[in-house]
Length: 353
Picture 1: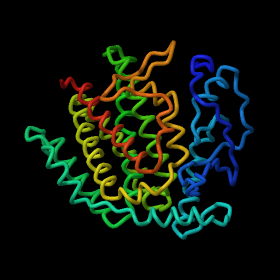
Picture 2: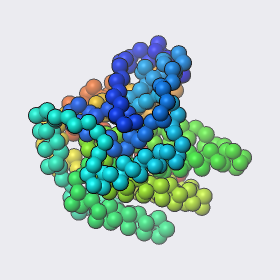
Picture 3: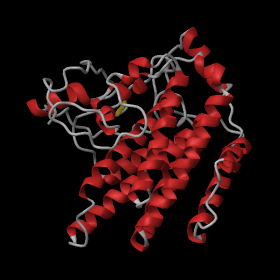
């Protein structure tokens, strides 16, 4: 476990939770959106943590982290989720009624003014060369149709909802790669990918925090968007499992295309909404994550006694990166850098120079 001594440069945080109907939720004070994806907690008392775990989470935990009892059975969890979403269809949510401050109302109004032009995203992709001409149809056709589907569904919806969908789905490739590499190790097929699993773990954790940022900004408030994102992610996982079995190189190449699309999408969003984003505050989860040792190590940072888990792409990493954020534009620019790093890493995983 990581220790306080070796990570002394990181700030200590006191994490507080409130409980409501079995939900552990930490709404961002600047936006006050209650996460609709936090799920249920088993009806058990919090589990006392060992000293090792206590040391670890004191420096490694982020705003939405929770160390406690194991989950309930899948039947109870699925039943609770179904009931919540069924009620949500009719606009009935389980949450306390709280008066929003003038500042929160203002921030939400500014969020509602954010826009994203899908046609401009396509132009960006074409300007950098688009889909390579030698891309196999088994990759090219699904990629093009997926992008078209996203454009059709989300063109008239808030961009943050599109990002929630993208980040929910974007975690699946890395989970797939870890699953398959683990399977190959277990069966004695292939063991040279052991270190690669660590990188994929960092990438999944990175996408997870992008997802938490979109939730803090209200991206998961609509039940239809949640339904579409979650079911698409499950289907995407199994498609990628089959693709990886047939050709890991093609699986990684599909991720290269998708991560490249994410870079184009976020860059267009930042430039199109620069003024509004510059006037919006930084979500707490964004500052916490980009200040964390997880992020610092995952981009090549050095902590005494702990090796970086990824090569350095571009500028040297720095501790307390999140403290440099002044507004929401800085957050999305950091996300652009993350997605660009993923493109390079996926190329390296498939053996590209």
